[in-house]
Length: 163
Image (cartoon, rainbow, N blue to C red; front, top):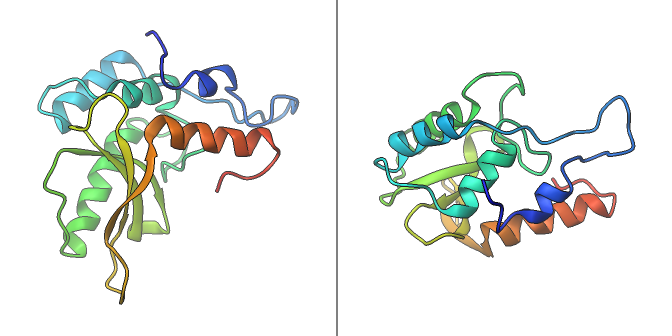
């Protein structure tokens, strides 16, 4: 796959390139698995290019995202999508447009996602599910997927934790 949006992740595939014991290297998923996810979560339509690149480069493990699962578990991305949709039901929330979860944090309360109908480099959104005063449940981070991932890679390159 030609990488257009996430060249920085491709060119800096390890969180700790000089650590022999643990490099935190990105791990891909196959094109076949990406196509299966497209069938399940985008009615068979191709995902946005930046999302496809993310999955192709780091769909099984990405040192700047937390998929919320054991790194060796198969079908990490599908499990993440199923879990997030269950959390939406648990908190009586709904996302009416086609979406794909890219990161999870704070257990079943918060996750990051992209809409699948916003072009090749969609914006990243946050879902904050519990009821709290003055908290928007769904809000844009005002960064495209590539901007978001690149900013996290930059943080790692400077020696900081992206989380």
